[in-house]
Length: 424
Ligand code: LLP
Image (cartoon, rainbow, N blue to C red; front, side, top):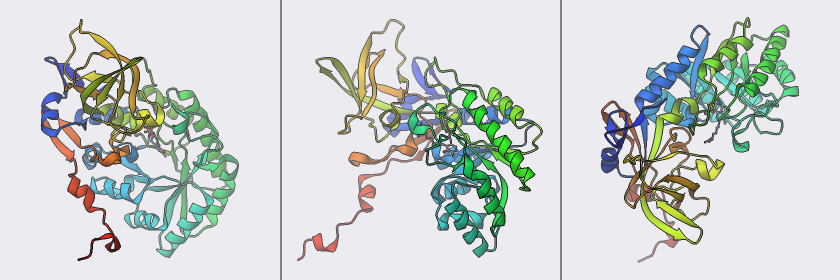
């Protein structure tokens, strides 16, 4: 469910006409709906009502401060993977005690920062990381609350590039090494074992692999308790898929929550969730303007003003985003089959191949739907294109929550060394 719909012939975000917004902000730009973000956070919270649960929004999906502040106001915590994400989450008003720190490559500096703030939990991904964390924490006279992220060797995820829970993936501690590593953790200074963590992939469309992974994790938690470890939390990661097309039917949060309740029944643990896409994905779109139609012998290209640098998902994962014209097409409007491409000098700069859609003319606005997660966060300034701006809508108001940088600002970060400067 989201709040992007046609009204009086124009696509709106909540009560804002997107053609008016595009006129003020320019394209390309991302547009997020406050009501959709709130709704998704509330649906998940309602699904888990009655379970001791922390919803730690996965900041990597959408790290805009305004989006994080919207979710902070809903009571969400954060799952962060860098010192930068940690600072963002704190600045957006998410309390440290609702923040978990994931990721395979935490540095000593990042660990110290997180310890200073007193975060809820470190999700430790290797023996080396555990030992460094012990050193950093004991050096600061603190105890780091940890869960070890285990690799349950379960395949899941919508695309091999986003599957993370199989043997051979870089993520988590291999299943057979988990128990010895917990034993080591218990013996280290500065380490306080609090739980077990798992995350098997993203855009997961059915509960079967998730259930298989969580059952293994619950079994492990029971063995760890029997060995004397205090396991009071299970972090189940993120991964719940969203509909990118009408035909996609991912499991609803209620079924996901019921499955988790069933698998963890009687364990008496806090369940930590790290949802990213399911909260932000359908809460955002990317707006673009059609520039040219170009006929090739076997196809028609629709060239638009957004590139793969602005929305990477199609180039990186072959991902599908629905494309809707902002001006609502009449029921009998002509249709056309396009390859929708951007201006970047790369063949992968393609948003859709052979897409049958309402015919578009140069100057028309189009919207890439379901672009609120892993959209703006993955953007770059490739081809010296300014980073794409982001706009947050709330009812009939909108605000530019990240502006488009000017060329001077972009070039200010660079410098030509003295030896190349002309001498006088
Ligand atoms: N927790 C951990 C440890 C993760 O690695 C991720 C996502 C999440 C939570 C959130 O997963 P979600 O609920 O959003 O599925 N860029 C790719 C997706 C990469 C996902 C990376 N990790 C895409 O655009 O499809």
